[in-house]
Length: 205
Image (tube, rainbow, N blue to C red):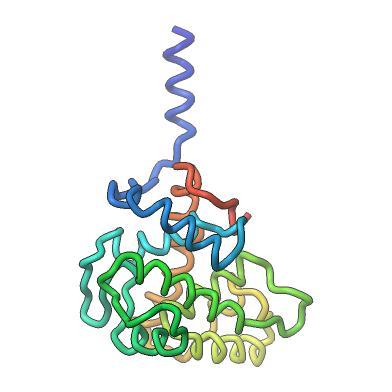
């Protein structure tokens, strides 16, 4: 009887809408961890990056969409640009899992390093990563413009949630997709990967 009650309690405490992690993810876990720690240090938020790949392609190296390809869903133009900007990546190869993982991390770092605080000494990690992910999804130039619009409206350009996320001149469809992207990765998928043992603490409290 006690055991039955314990099982019921454990089940009731489990996330109701937790999405299963694709079995293919496990085969990339070690490589993603190694590459992430090269780019972001030993405390790299590997679970966040795993969540990003999940959102982009559900871990399918051959994934194709109308405008992007591979695990990390690079557009042809962005893949060519980042290969030229960071020659150590080698030739653009979005259908190569190893290239895609490394290029995604390099691009994330590239975007994040260029999002600087306006008012505060530092941007909180949760907001900083949300802006970075918004830039990955829709282009870093849009993040800069959205932050300016937030400032003009009296909101804090150093805060994404409830501030910058409410300001943009993007088309409605692009706004909907772009605002959903960081929320899903940071608040839904990343916790799932952390619970499954992927490296990294919670980026958002």
